[in-house]
Amino acid sequence: MELYRPRRFETFLMKFLPLIWANLKRRKLRTLLTLLSILVAFLLFGYLCAIKEALNAGVSVAGADRLVVRHRVSIIQLLPETYKARMEKIPGVASATHQTWFGGIYQDPRNFFPQMPVVPEEFLAMYPEIILAPEAKQRWLETRTGAIVGRKTAERFKWKVGDRVPIQSTIWAKKDGKRLWEFDVAGIFDGRDKAVDTTPLYFRYDYFQESRAFGSGQVGWYAIRVKDPAQSAAIAGQVDEEFANSPAETKTETEGAFVQAFAKQVGDIALITAAILSAVFFTILLVAGNTMMQSVRERTGEVGALKAMGFTHGRVLGLVLAESCLLSGLGGALGLGLATLLISRGDPTGSLLPTFHLPARDVLIGCVFVVGLGVATGVFPAVQAMRLRVADALRRM
Amino acid sequence: MSERKSGAGDGVLVRAGGVDKVYKRGSESVHVLAELDLEVRQGEFLALMGPSGSGKSTLLNLIGGLDRPSKGSVTVGGERIDELSDRALAAWRARHVGFVFQLYNLLPVLTAERNVELPLLLTHLSKGERRKHVATALSVVGLAHRTRHYPPQLSGGEQQRVGIARAIVTDPTLLLCDEPTGDLDRKAGDEILDLLQALNRQHGKTIIMVTHDPHASARANRTVYLNKGQLSNEPIA
Image (cartoon, rainbow over all chains, first blue to last red):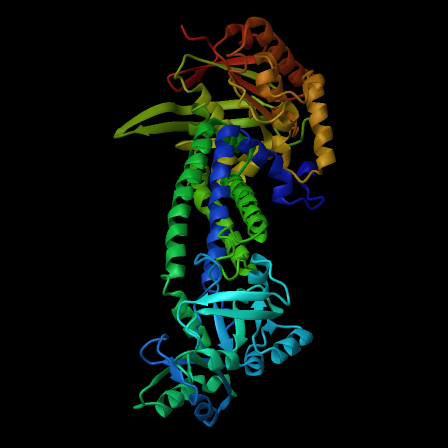
């Protein structure tokens, strides 16, 4: 028959979109409210993902070839500076460098950001993800009280190169008994990518060592670079063995595990995020599912008329599913879009978080959730509409 | 619009033979149609009358492939439609049958032209071709000026005209009308009957119309009466 001979390609969606769209507009207020609830759910999803990313900052950039060595008892116990040379003698260790927690306050305790004394050249070689201009590096090496500060903190406090920054340490007193330390900003560093924490301030260890009133020759923890990441576990064991039965025994682990353990001090971020999102999406599933159920129940007679015209059960199923997916897709796209926009405008905590961005991976997961939500909310009404017998449906008009 | 050559060689388009239809209501069986035989010739305008619950709509549903007989056969255009699968039956309905309902069954969220276009979405016509067919169907029913109106903006008579345009837009073999004037006043009803008569006479459409209105059945070429599941050519006393 002429009408039914295939002529040209037109997708299901192109052909049926006006019908699907018109059905969504049937009860505008109901659709709008459902759309808003989906939007809010995906906005929340975006923010929680950004916060989770921030609290886990460092895990994703942790070097696969770096190990962290800390005191076996706790990270606040110090290790001897002399361990560096012994570590570097262990086969498979390429280099080692140390850091120490300074615990300083700038003006107000709420202005938290980390500060650590480091050996500049060793430190920069160990962490290539920290991007510092050569002239800044040169200035830092030439200035004993010099410090480099991450872009985020520099912008937060409007610091610029040449500024003298006073920081009150909560731990370290100087030999003159004062806890106020002053640093000269020698450079501002950036991260190789968005996941790199640009909140810390790093200052020179030699200045720290000469000025501190106690703890001379003691450092916080070590980072060591291994020659072959495949040997990390074996080398970690050798390091710990090297210092076994000494007054300062060590615990060595990969940098990723170390950062993860540090982040877990706040709580199991992934579990908390998953729990909140599960509750939110379960609620949205009920809201959107109810909307779809009501919407399809209201048009039983229309479904009957469509089937009388020749719409197959499968096509009716497809139409209802496409409608729920369109609703979910619109809400999800608006929610994720708005989340991306708002997150790109900055950290809502006023730079308390080390990084704040929505990773592309989470946007992709969000898109999968959008489709999943659309299918989950549409599947029951769609099957109901599919199973509807035409004669019964027409009687219900 | 032209009548398609889809009938059997003897000029009979619809043949129902020994049709039984039994509904189950709990443990009870209700015989709606019993050993019913009916033949409708191509180009005929048949009125099907009978009291409420006599099985008129059930018979119409069987002829239109919306339901299946419990026993017997239904042949349309030489094809045993009671033996088709659900999917094949849906495709058959799309190609061969146009339904006109008492309550119009239009989608209130679509304009008149979008409603009429619905059966064409199952074809492979392009958007432009569909638009042409829709314009033709709407002009046949005299609604070329109301294409962008939504059903709630139209009178009952106009809505039924849109329903008829939707039924004829694919140029079907058979038009099945279930109480097409049942929800209309006399004037609007007459206009619909004029239209159905014109489709039968001028376009050769085979029409089976269920009605309980003698005024409507008078427009048909032939009237059959259904009572207690049996057909007769004489009105029920």
